[in-house]
Length: 151
Image 1 (cartoon, rainbow, N blue to C red):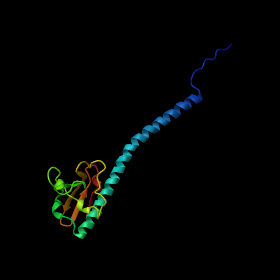
Image 2: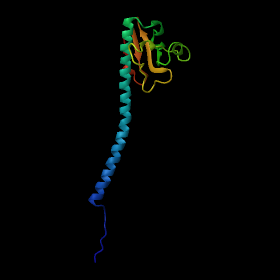
Image 3: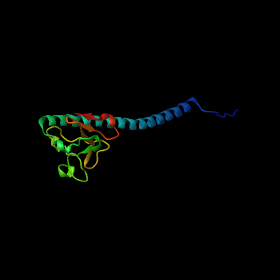
Image 4: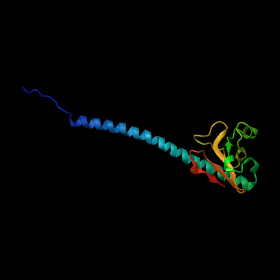
């Protein structure tokens, strides 16, 4: 009788190994692209928030409801915009020393937008300053400098 010795792998075994490797590779690729996707979504949300703040602030300026003395006159002196729950002296005094935008709620905004990553505690993560007598600039955190908008 012949002794049958198997040497090597069958086609089915090779296909199973390739399928398992393909599944593992796809899971790894999805995980790594998810981080990039989340950063992209955060940047898009920042841009949307800056535009919301810009539109609301421009409407309030036209209506004469913006306390201009709160907004610093230079980029170097830009101040944080406070979250809605921090109003008045809670926002403008030490330790926050921010700008109170609570006058925008509820007439111009349903709530003050908060940065998805940098907004913590009393601040929203966005800064504001004046650029000359007629322009108010709202900037996102340093993570997304391309999203700044001006009025």
